[in-house]
Length: 252
Ligand SMILES: NC(=O)c1ccc[n+]([C@@H]2O[C@H](COP(=O)([O-])OP(=O)(O)OC[C@H]3O[C@@H](n4cnc5c(N)ncnc54)[C@H](OP(=O)(O)O)[C@@H]3O)[C@@H](O)[C@H]2O)c1
Image 1: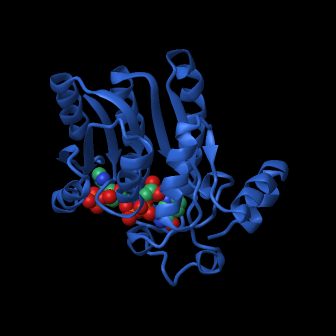
Image 2: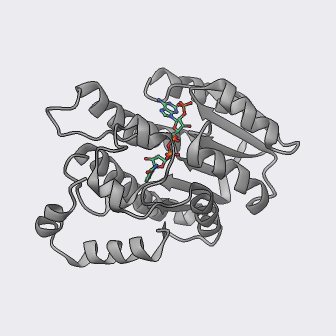
């Protein structure tokens, strides 16, 4: 069965990915929705117009969840046409000051889980399949006060670029999206709201438009999608400026 797997589907941009995927990838027959809050996944599932849905209440910071997903894939043998690695978290705070558990949650969810989910899903993807990896503008340059978060997103962009090459012969594309700030639960959960001058100053992206633009970019086979001209310019500046200089201006 042609299947889409979306992590972090219970809120924010993950929910928007599912809603837009209905129209942009009409061939999808079944959605596997992954996050910890099963109630929120069921609410989303009820919106997905008659498509089959599988709600998987998994904590992707717990490696046991990879075994659950692996077994489900082995039992169901879906044909994955779209994988969206969207689940992520980001906490504001210096290394050595923020609780270690929060710093490592970012590496577990944004790096380890994204790697494990992709690795488990690729064998079930056929020619024409698409992988979307949610990165961030934070991947362009280390952001002091969010050093761990920006480092995890640099990994996501690099990983996405690498697997794109690995999977080229199989006809599977990988697209990384690099949004600026979005007004989702992420901002409150990360202790960012009202505590970061940078986040207060930057223009916000709309999660629904970002999800739509990302899926269209994935369908077109693009490697990266950066919403908003402002952030495209930032990406260009970050590329041509030495990081030793960029990092001085990139405090969050
Ligand atoms: N918002 C921003 O400013 C911003 C900017 C650039 C990039 N991003 C990236 O965009 C992506 C989506 O974020 P968002 O803004 O939509 O944030 P969000 O509203 O906080 O959504 C995060 C999603 O991840 C899920 N999640 C969190 N921890 C999880 C865990 N341990 N196991 C499984 N699922 C988990 C959450 O569901 P449960 O709580 O139900 O588990 C939720 O569905 C993230 O990768 C984030 O880094 C966000």
